[in-house]
Image 1 (spheres, rainbow, N blue to C red):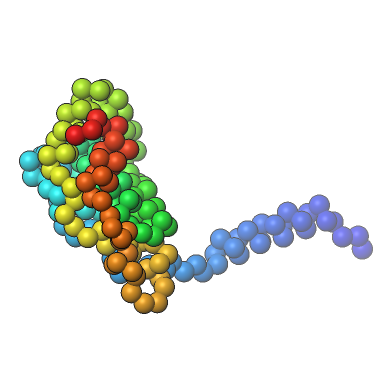
Image 2 (tube, rainbow, N blue to C red; image 1 turned 45 degrees about the vertical axis):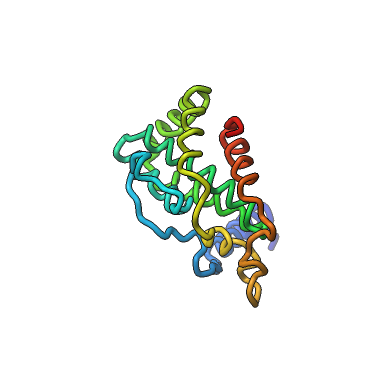
Length: 194
């Protein structure tokens, strides 16, 4: 009896792929990873403050999209991005910096597709206009430098899985917050020096 390898090879490939797809996977996480500490809605600029983390701010974006409050959402998005950029500068573990991308992805994934596309369009329209962006930069600068410990990001990094306490609570030693603030404003939003 002759073996039909043309039939067996695709079947084996299918069975292997099926078993890999059904294989158990383990998701490791640490306490505080991507943690939001304050629940906010689609707030106006005057209700936002420097104690809100990017995890808090990004979680408000789907609410803004659902309410079609895209302009409010753009401001919250910009503030979250500047704060996440700042946190990326002050958190020592470089692997932790991916927290900002994950939070953005989670936020956008929880929006309906049509709302997501309209919101992205509003972000591009608003932030590509120099005058609008300059106004947003000024308002974010007036809210000021973050006044929270970036646990959401520190706990996202690989060092959070290592035994023992992290040096300097996971933050960069001798961190210059004023310089980093200017870097965050210019690096994320292309703001002029304030």
